[in-house]
Amino acid sequence: MSETNAKSYTIMTLGESTVGKSSYIEKYVKNEFKNSLPTIGFNICSKYLYSSNGEKTKIIFQDTSGQERYHSLAFNIIRQVHGIILMYDITKKETFNTIRKWWNKILDYKDKHFPVILVGNKCDLEDKRQVQKEEGENIAKELGIKFIEISNKNGMNIKESARELIKMILRNNNENEDLKSVKLDNKKLKKRKKKKCCK
Image 1 (cartoon, rainbow, N blue to C red):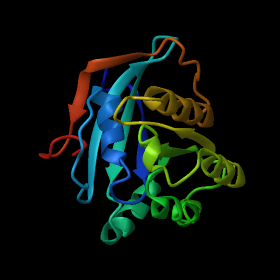
Image 2 (image 1 turned 60 degrees about the vertical axis):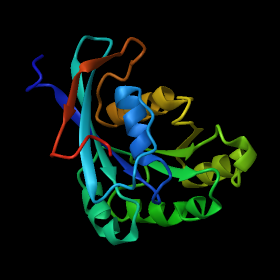
Image 3 (image 1 turned 30 degrees about the vertical axis):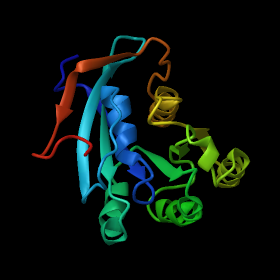
């Protein structure tokens, strides 16, 4: 299957500013960690992968700003995406306290079975933790969504969380969800706009 004909699915990041949405995509797409400046508006980048049946699939990441003045833009984008990474910072309780607000906004545009994964970032900073893992597990159970803690810095659960969401998206679209032999195609990284991807 050519790149032009490859099936494509869009994943959107949601959450407060500075929780690590841009760094998450940077780590997953390019295996690099950078303390990125807050995203202005939104950025788009993509990566190709191969499913176990040999089909090429394009995963497009919509990296959205958590700043309040850009929330309306983020909410408009929700209509177009196939899955959402809803993220908070375990060292900042205030970013966790807005999860229900973000979830309710998602439900304005999608049904409760839409593929969403709740991600608690910065679990490498255990000494600064303000949100216990059980709190993340409990709210995810309440909302009926998957939950995982990650670290953009050391890479903990980055691939696992992305793979879990992609499996949910493929299942939701009646596609082959067996990703055990997925190969990430680093050479096919694409950048859009004139901004550096995921900055």
